[in-house]
Length: 130
Image (cartoon, rainbow, N blue to C red):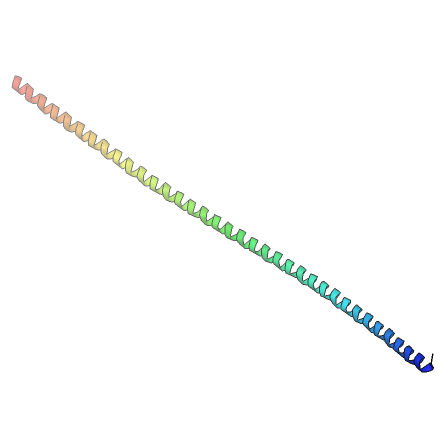
């Protein structure tokens, strides 16, 4: 072999080794970039999950607060309705008591009137007989 051919082949070999080294370096860079992207994706995914859990917890807390407020409002409404019902019952009881008194007075008046009427009729009969 001629020394020129050996030089050319050596230079070509050196270029091939250099290109292989460059390709390996590029491959390692691509692998590092992919690993970094995967790590970034996992971090973003973890952050999104954490944010979702926080929002979910906030929504649950808000729902529980609204539910507690609704229960309190319902209980207050029930208590007001009970109080109104008891007030109405007391008013009806008072009216019934007044009616009972009026009926008793009327009954007494009717009995007195009946007694007076019977007394007059008896006095008239004694006047007729006598």
